[in-house]
Image (cartoon, rainbow, N blue to C red; front, top):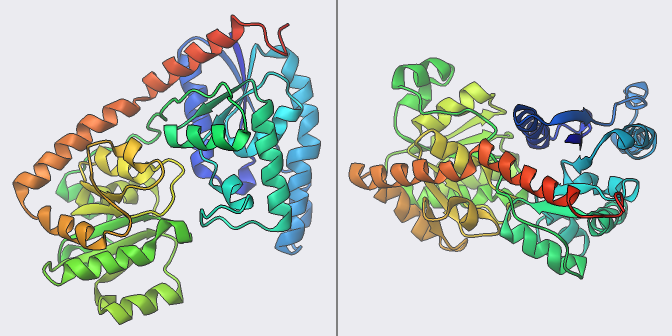
Amino acid sequence: MKVLLVANYRPDEQQSMLRFAALLASGLKQAGVQVRVVAPEPRLLPLFKATPAPVRKWVAYLDKFVLFTGTLWTQRPWADIVHICDHSNAIYAHFLPGASVTCHDLLAVRGALGEDTDCPATLTGKLLQRLILSGLRRSRLVICDSTHTQGDLQRLAGRQLDAPVVLLGLNRPYRPLPPDEIQARLAALPDLWTRPYLLHVGSALARKNREGVLRIFALAHRHWDGQVVLAGEPAGPALRELAQQLGIAHRLIEVPSPDDERLEALYSGAHALLFPSRFEGFGWPPLEAQQCHCPVICSDTTSLPEVVANSALVFSLDDEQGMASAILRLTDPHERSIWIARGRQNIERFRPERMIDEYLGHYRRLLATPGPDRA
Protein backbone atom coordinates (compact mmCIF):
# COMPACT_ATOMS: atom_id res chain seq x y z
CA MET A 1 0.00 0.00 0.00
CA LYS A 2 1.23 3.50 -0.90
CA VAL A 3 -0.11 6.40 1.15
CA LEU A 4 0.43 10.07 0.36
CA LEU A 5 -0.04 12.21 3.48
CA VAL A 6 -0.81 15.89 3.00
CA ALA A 7 0.57 17.81 5.99
CA ASN A 8 0.38 21.44 7.13
CA TYR A 9 2.18 24.62 6.14
CA ARG A 10 4.93 25.02 8.74
CA PRO A 11 4.80 28.85 8.99
CA ASP A 12 1.25 28.49 10.38
CA GLU A 13 2.85 26.85 13.46
CA GLN A 14 -0.05 24.44 14.02
CA GLN A 15 2.08 22.21 16.23
CA SER A 16 -0.59 19.66 17.12
CA MET A 17 -1.37 19.13 13.43
CA LEU A 18 2.32 18.72 12.58
CA ARG A 19 2.69 16.18 15.38
CA PHE A 20 -0.37 14.26 14.18
CA ALA A 21 0.99 14.01 10.62
CA ALA A 22 4.36 12.83 11.97
CA LEU A 23 2.67 10.24 14.20
CA LEU A 24 0.54 8.92 11.34
CA ALA A 25 3.52 8.74 8.97
CA SER A 26 5.72 6.97 11.51
CA GLY A 27 3.04 4.46 12.47
CA LEU A 28 2.16 3.60 8.89
CA LYS A 29 5.82 3.09 8.01
CA GLN A 30 6.26 0.76 10.97
CA ALA A 31 3.27 -1.22 9.67
CA GLY A 32 5.05 -1.75 6.35
CA VAL A 33 3.23 0.92 4.36
CA GLN A 34 5.08 3.04 1.80
CA VAL A 35 4.55 6.65 2.87
CA ARG A 36 5.28 10.02 1.34
CA VAL A 37 4.58 13.25 3.21
CA VAL A 38 4.01 16.44 1.23
CA ALA A 39 3.25 19.90 2.55
CA PRO A 40 3.07 23.43 1.12
CA GLU A 41 6.46 25.11 1.11
CA PRO A 42 6.90 28.78 2.06
CA ARG A 43 8.08 29.90 -1.38
CA LEU A 44 6.59 33.38 -1.56
CA LEU A 45 6.20 34.18 2.14
CA PRO A 46 9.94 34.76 2.83
CA LEU A 47 9.89 37.51 0.19
CA PHE A 48 7.37 39.50 2.26
CA LYS A 49 8.98 39.53 5.70
CA ALA A 50 8.55 43.28 6.21
CA THR A 51 4.95 43.49 5.01
CA PRO A 52 1.88 43.84 7.27
CA ALA A 53 0.30 40.66 8.64
CA PRO A 54 -2.85 40.85 6.45
CA VAL A 55 -0.68 40.92 3.31
CA ARG A 56 1.43 38.01 4.56
CA LYS A 57 -1.76 36.04 5.20
CA TRP A 58 -2.77 36.39 1.54
CA VAL A 59 0.74 35.50 0.39
CA ALA A 60 0.54 32.35 2.52
CA TYR A 61 -2.75 31.50 0.79
CA LEU A 62 -0.89 31.63 -2.53
CA ASP A 63 1.77 29.26 -1.20
CA LYS A 64 -0.86 26.86 0.16
CA PHE A 65 -3.69 26.94 -2.34
CA VAL A 66 -2.08 27.94 -5.65
CA LEU A 67 1.58 26.90 -5.83
CA PHE A 68 1.10 23.69 -3.85
CA THR A 69 -1.57 22.32 -6.18
CA GLY A 70 1.13 21.49 -8.73
CA THR A 71 2.90 19.31 -6.16
CA LEU A 72 -0.35 17.51 -5.39
CA TRP A 73 -1.08 16.78 -9.04
CA THR A 74 2.47 15.49 -9.53
CA GLN A 75 2.42 13.22 -6.48
CA ARG A 76 -1.16 11.92 -6.79
CA PRO A 77 -0.54 9.17 -9.41
CA TRP A 78 2.01 7.46 -7.13
CA ALA A 79 -0.42 6.82 -4.27
CA ASP A 80 -3.09 4.24 -3.59
CA ILE A 81 -4.47 6.46 -0.81
CA VAL A 82 -4.24 10.24 -0.45
CA HIS A 83 -4.93 11.41 3.08
CA ILE A 84 -5.25 15.05 4.11
CA CYS A 85 -4.11 15.16 7.75
CA ASP A 86 -5.98 18.30 8.79
CA HIS A 87 -9.54 19.20 7.84
CA SER A 88 -8.53 22.87 7.54
CA ASN A 89 -6.82 21.75 4.32
CA ALA A 90 -9.92 19.98 3.00
CA ILE A 91 -9.90 22.54 0.18
CA TYR A 92 -7.35 20.22 -1.45
CA ALA A 93 -10.11 17.61 -1.83
CA HIS A 94 -11.40 19.74 -4.73
CA PHE A 95 -8.16 18.85 -6.59
CA LEU A 96 -7.87 15.28 -5.28
CA PRO A 97 -10.91 13.12 -6.16
CA GLY A 98 -11.22 10.20 -3.77
CA ALA A 99 -9.05 11.73 -1.04
CA SER A 100 -9.64 11.02 2.64
CA VAL A 101 -9.38 13.59 5.44
CA THR A 102 -8.99 13.65 9.21
CA CYS A 103 -11.53 16.04 10.75
CA HIS A 104 -10.30 17.18 14.15
CA ASP A 105 -13.10 19.63 14.89
CA LEU A 106 -15.49 22.01 13.16
CA LEU A 107 -15.42 24.92 15.60
CA ALA A 108 -14.15 27.40 12.99
CA VAL A 109 -16.68 26.21 10.40
CA ARG A 110 -19.49 26.50 12.93
CA GLY A 111 -18.32 29.97 13.93
CA ALA A 112 -18.25 31.08 10.29
CA LEU A 113 -21.83 29.85 9.93
CA GLY A 114 -22.94 32.00 12.85
CA GLU A 115 -22.91 29.42 15.65
CA ASP A 116 -21.47 30.32 19.06
CA THR A 117 -18.10 28.58 19.32
CA ASP A 118 -15.89 31.51 20.38
CA CYS A 119 -14.46 31.38 16.84
CA PRO A 120 -15.61 34.55 15.05
CA ALA A 121 -14.72 34.82 11.36
CA THR A 122 -13.98 37.71 9.02
CA LEU A 123 -15.65 37.90 5.62
CA THR A 124 -12.64 36.15 4.08
CA GLY A 125 -12.64 33.63 6.91
CA LYS A 126 -16.28 32.80 6.27
CA LEU A 127 -15.49 32.10 2.62
CA LEU A 128 -12.52 29.91 3.57
CA GLN A 129 -14.56 27.88 6.04
CA ARG A 130 -17.30 27.32 3.46
CA LEU A 131 -14.67 26.00 1.05
CA ILE A 132 -13.38 23.70 3.79
CA LEU A 133 -16.88 22.35 4.43
CA SER A 134 -17.38 21.89 0.69
CA GLY A 135 -14.09 19.97 0.53
CA LEU A 136 -15.21 17.70 3.36
CA ARG A 137 -18.43 16.97 1.47
CA ARG A 138 -16.37 15.95 -1.59
CA SER A 139 -14.04 13.67 0.37
CA ARG A 140 -14.49 9.95 -0.01
CA LEU A 141 -13.73 9.27 3.66
CA VAL A 142 -13.65 11.67 6.63
CA ILE A 143 -12.16 10.19 9.80
CA CYS A 144 -13.34 12.09 12.88
CA ASP A 145 -11.48 12.38 16.18
CA SER A 146 -14.65 12.12 18.27
CA THR A 147 -18.34 11.34 18.03
CA HIS A 148 -18.99 14.99 18.85
CA THR A 149 -17.11 16.09 15.73
CA GLN A 150 -18.78 13.31 13.75
CA GLY A 151 -22.18 14.68 14.78
CA ASP A 152 -21.20 18.22 13.78
CA LEU A 153 -19.96 16.97 10.41
CA GLN A 154 -23.09 15.01 9.52
CA ARG A 155 -25.30 17.91 10.59
CA LEU A 156 -23.38 20.58 8.68
CA ALA A 157 -22.75 18.45 5.60
CA GLY A 158 -26.48 18.07 5.09
CA ARG A 159 -26.13 14.41 4.14
CA GLN A 160 -24.61 11.21 5.47
CA LEU A 161 -20.88 10.94 4.80
CA ASP A 162 -18.54 8.00 5.31
CA ALA A 163 -17.27 9.45 8.59
CA PRO A 164 -16.08 6.85 11.13
CA VAL A 165 -14.61 7.84 14.49
CA VAL A 166 -10.99 6.99 15.30
CA LEU A 167 -9.66 8.33 18.60
CA LEU A 168 -6.28 10.02 18.30
CA GLY A 169 -3.13 8.34 19.51
CA LEU A 170 -0.94 9.97 22.14
CA ASN A 171 1.81 11.91 20.39
CA ARG A 172 4.03 12.86 23.33
CA PRO A 173 5.87 10.24 25.42
CA TYR A 174 5.03 11.85 28.77
CA ARG A 175 5.51 9.98 32.05
CA PRO A 176 5.27 10.80 35.77
CA LEU A 177 8.55 12.31 36.94
CA PRO A 178 10.17 11.82 40.37
CA PRO A 179 10.26 14.92 42.64
CA ASP A 180 13.96 15.62 42.16
CA GLU A 181 13.61 15.65 38.37
CA ILE A 182 10.53 17.88 38.58
CA GLN A 183 12.43 20.39 40.69
CA ALA A 184 15.45 20.28 38.39
CA ARG A 185 13.35 21.03 35.31
CA LEU A 186 11.42 23.80 37.10
CA ALA A 187 14.39 25.33 38.91
CA ALA A 188 13.65 28.72 37.32
CA LEU A 189 10.31 28.79 39.16
CA PRO A 190 11.29 28.75 42.87
CA ASP A 191 7.89 30.11 44.00
CA LEU A 192 6.29 26.94 42.67
CA TRP A 193 7.57 24.92 45.62
CA THR A 194 6.20 27.12 48.39
CA ARG A 195 2.75 25.45 48.21
CA PRO A 196 0.72 23.05 46.00
CA TYR A 197 -0.44 24.34 42.65
CA LEU A 198 -3.37 23.91 40.31
CA LEU A 199 -2.43 23.79 36.63
CA HIS A 200 -4.15 25.09 33.50
CA VAL A 201 -2.61 24.44 30.08
CA GLY A 202 -3.82 26.31 27.02
CA SER A 203 -3.92 29.46 24.97
CA ALA A 204 -5.57 32.79 25.74
CA LEU A 205 -8.48 32.04 23.38
CA ALA A 206 -11.87 32.83 24.90
CA ARG A 207 -13.00 29.22 24.53
CA LYS A 208 -10.27 28.09 26.94
CA ASN A 209 -12.10 29.95 29.73
CA ARG A 210 -9.12 31.21 31.70
CA GLU A 211 -11.45 33.59 33.54
CA GLY A 212 -13.32 30.54 34.79
CA VAL A 213 -10.03 29.01 35.95
CA LEU A 214 -9.37 32.05 38.14
CA ARG A 215 -12.91 32.16 39.52
CA ILE A 216 -12.84 28.45 40.38
CA PHE A 217 -9.43 28.77 42.01
CA ALA A 218 -10.65 31.77 44.03
CA LEU A 219 -13.55 29.69 45.39
CA ALA A 220 -11.21 26.86 46.39
CA HIS A 221 -8.61 29.25 47.77
CA ARG A 222 -10.93 30.14 50.65
CA HIS A 223 -10.28 26.66 52.05
CA TRP A 224 -7.05 25.60 50.29
CA ASP A 225 -3.65 27.26 50.61
CA GLY A 226 -2.54 26.65 47.04
CA GLN A 227 -1.67 28.61 43.91
CA VAL A 228 -2.65 28.50 40.25
CA VAL A 229 -0.30 28.13 37.27
CA LEU A 230 -1.25 29.25 33.75
CA ALA A 231 0.96 27.48 31.21
CA GLY A 232 0.71 28.79 27.65
CA GLU A 233 0.22 32.32 26.43
CA PRO A 234 0.93 35.11 28.95
CA ALA A 235 -2.10 36.46 30.77
CA GLY A 236 -3.34 39.74 29.33
CA PRO A 237 -4.19 42.90 31.30
CA ALA A 238 -7.86 41.94 31.66
CA LEU A 239 -7.04 38.55 33.19
CA ARG A 240 -4.50 40.06 35.58
CA GLU A 241 -7.07 42.65 36.61
CA LEU A 242 -9.57 39.85 37.32
CA ALA A 243 -6.97 38.13 39.50
CA GLN A 244 -6.59 41.38 41.46
CA GLN A 245 -10.35 41.71 41.88
CA LEU A 246 -10.61 38.12 43.12
CA GLY A 247 -7.77 38.66 45.59
CA ILE A 248 -5.58 35.92 44.11
CA ALA A 249 -3.01 37.90 42.11
CA HIS A 250 -0.31 36.93 44.62
CA ARG A 251 -1.09 33.26 43.96
CA LEU A 252 -1.01 33.45 40.14
CA ILE A 253 2.08 32.09 38.37
CA GLU A 254 2.52 32.37 34.60
CA VAL A 255 4.70 29.97 32.61
CA PRO A 256 4.75 31.29 29.03
CA SER A 257 5.14 28.77 26.20
CA PRO A 258 6.69 25.90 28.19
CA ASP A 259 8.64 23.34 26.16
CA ASP A 260 7.83 19.63 26.42
CA GLU A 261 10.30 18.98 29.25
CA ARG A 262 8.96 21.79 31.39
CA LEU A 263 5.34 20.93 30.61
CA GLU A 264 5.90 17.29 31.58
CA ALA A 265 7.33 18.48 34.89
CA LEU A 266 4.41 20.87 35.48
CA TYR A 267 1.91 18.06 34.97
CA SER A 268 3.89 15.69 37.18
CA GLY A 269 4.04 18.12 40.09
CA ALA A 270 0.52 19.56 39.93
CA HIS A 271 -2.25 19.02 42.48
CA ALA A 272 -4.61 18.71 39.49
CA LEU A 273 -5.23 19.94 35.96
CA LEU A 274 -8.19 22.34 35.86
CA PHE A 275 -9.67 22.43 32.36
CA PRO A 276 -13.08 24.18 32.25
CA SER A 277 -13.10 24.80 28.49
CA ARG A 278 -16.15 26.19 26.75
CA PHE A 279 -15.34 24.45 23.46
CA GLU A 280 -12.70 21.85 22.56
CA GLY A 281 -11.78 20.23 19.28
CA PHE A 282 -10.39 17.20 21.10
CA GLY A 283 -8.70 17.98 24.41
CA TRP A 284 -5.04 17.00 24.67
CA PRO A 285 -4.15 18.49 28.09
CA PRO A 286 -6.37 16.09 30.11
CA LEU A 287 -4.68 13.09 28.47
CA GLU A 288 -1.20 14.56 28.89
CA ALA A 289 -1.97 15.16 32.56
CA GLN A 290 -3.13 11.57 32.99
CA GLN A 291 0.10 10.32 31.39
CA CYS A 292 1.89 12.13 34.23
CA HIS A 293 -0.45 10.77 36.95
CA CYS A 294 -2.08 14.17 37.44
CA PRO A 295 -5.82 14.11 38.30
CA VAL A 296 -8.12 16.03 35.96
CA ILE A 297 -11.05 18.35 36.69
CA CYS A 298 -12.86 19.48 33.55
CA SER A 299 -16.09 20.71 32.00
CA ASP A 300 -18.56 18.50 30.16
CA THR A 301 -18.47 20.45 26.89
CA THR A 302 -18.02 19.26 23.29
CA SER A 303 -15.56 16.33 23.05
CA LEU A 304 -14.25 16.35 26.63
CA PRO A 305 -16.68 13.79 28.15
CA GLU A 306 -15.72 11.35 25.39
CA VAL A 307 -11.98 11.94 25.87
CA VAL A 308 -11.92 11.53 29.65
CA ALA A 309 -14.89 9.10 29.98
CA ASN A 310 -15.15 8.22 33.69
CA SER A 311 -11.51 9.02 34.45
CA ALA A 312 -11.90 12.67 35.47
CA LEU A 313 -14.01 14.83 37.75
CA VAL A 314 -16.42 16.27 35.17
CA PHE A 315 -18.85 19.13 35.79
CA SER A 316 -21.27 21.33 33.92
CA LEU A 317 -19.49 24.42 32.62
CA ASP A 318 -21.47 26.70 34.93
CA ASP A 319 -20.86 24.55 38.03
CA GLU A 320 -17.79 26.43 39.18
CA GLN A 321 -18.53 25.65 42.82
CA GLY A 322 -18.54 21.95 41.97
CA MET A 323 -15.11 22.22 40.34
CA ALA A 324 -13.81 24.17 43.33
CA SER A 325 -15.10 21.44 45.65
CA ALA A 326 -13.31 18.84 43.50
CA ILE A 327 -10.02 20.66 44.12
CA LEU A 328 -10.61 20.19 47.85
CA ARG A 329 -11.65 16.54 47.41
CA LEU A 330 -8.27 15.81 45.84
CA THR A 331 -6.48 16.78 49.05
CA ASP A 332 -7.56 13.35 50.35
CA PRO A 333 -4.77 10.91 49.35
CA HIS A 334 -7.21 8.03 48.84
CA GLU A 335 -9.49 10.12 46.61
CA ARG A 336 -6.50 11.32 44.65
CA SER A 337 -5.21 7.78 44.11
CA ILE A 338 -8.59 6.72 42.69
CA TRP A 339 -8.51 9.40 39.98
CA ILE A 340 -4.87 8.78 39.15
CA ALA A 341 -5.64 5.08 38.63
CA ARG A 342 -8.63 5.89 36.42
CA GLY A 343 -6.50 8.25 34.36
CA ARG A 344 -3.88 5.55 33.82
CA GLN A 345 -6.59 3.19 32.57
CA ASN A 346 -8.07 5.86 30.31
CA ILE A 347 -4.89 6.61 28.37
CA GLU A 348 -4.75 2.98 27.24
CA ARG A 349 -7.58 3.88 24.84
CA PHE A 350 -5.26 6.31 23.06
CA ARG A 351 -2.34 4.04 22.18
CA PRO A 352 -0.84 5.10 18.81
CA GLU A 353 -0.76 1.45 17.65
CA ARG A 354 -4.54 1.21 18.02
CA MET A 355 -5.03 4.40 15.99
CA ILE A 356 -2.77 3.15 13.18
CA ASP A 357 -4.55 -0.21 13.04
CA GLU A 358 -7.90 1.53 12.65
CA TYR A 359 -6.62 3.89 9.95
CA LEU A 360 -5.21 0.92 8.04
CA GLY A 361 -8.55 -0.86 8.29
CA HIS A 362 -10.32 2.10 6.71
CA TYR A 363 -7.68 2.42 3.99
CA ARG A 364 -8.04 -1.26 3.09
CA ARG A 365 -11.80 -0.81 2.92
CA LEU A 366 -11.36 2.06 0.45
CA LEU A 367 -9.02 0.02 -1.72
CA ALA A 368 -11.49 -2.86 -1.81
CA THR A 369 -14.35 -0.62 -2.94
CA PRO A 370 -14.45 1.21 -6.30
CA GLY A 371 -14.48 4.97 -5.80
CA PRO A 372 -14.18 8.12 -7.91
CA ASP A 373 -10.42 7.60 -8.26
CA ARG A 374 -10.58 3.80 -8.72
CA ALA A 375 -13.60 3.14 -10.92
